[in-house]
Image 1 (cartoon, rainbow, N blue to C red):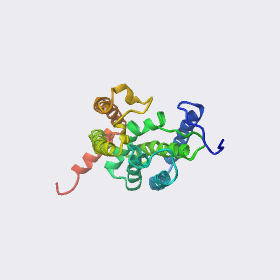
Image 2: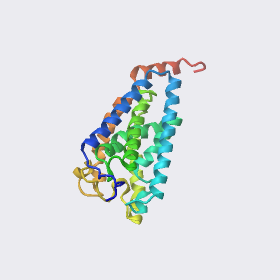
Image 3: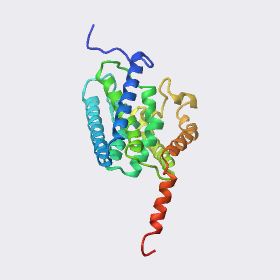
Image 4: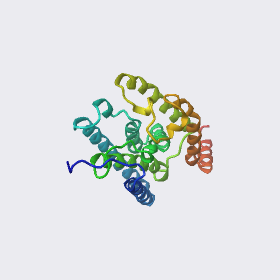
Length: 245
């Protein structure tokens, strides 16, 4: 018997709950501490978080490709939705581009968060894959909340709908890749066992039936980050007072 082999990951086991608790605790500490900093320090912390994101993404991608693994090489490419969200979160935290902030917030809290709830993970604690998975997905969750709660980012009108269209574009582009490689990036071929996708019919049709509930959730999320009415009125008043108009 090889003592180096980690036990299989069991969903909703004590280890799973402990990992979720660690993510929640880390999020609470970082968000609580971030809100007590001046804005320039908040931006700096966000950039550090974004740099950690990028390094984690590169290290995990390199490790999955080069090391011996139970998965075929086709399944180890950085083409998962959460992998792309890692790059989007890096852009949002480092450069604070409006489109990236919107995609990070709405994309993570509607899709990537499912990875924490129903992980597609085979190796349990204390394997490197276990820590890489929960650190990576935990950072996604923290970054999505860091944008509005600490950096005070606010969505523009229809940012939620635009994010849904970006997600749909990803699915349309990844479908032929999955057909070519025989992979399941974006879960276009079959739903992960126990995931919410199983409640929306067979693949790939659940990608269509999921559009309406996804849009409802996105609209509700938009209400939490839409521009404050008072701020909009102040911006309008400042524009009206500009000279030469």
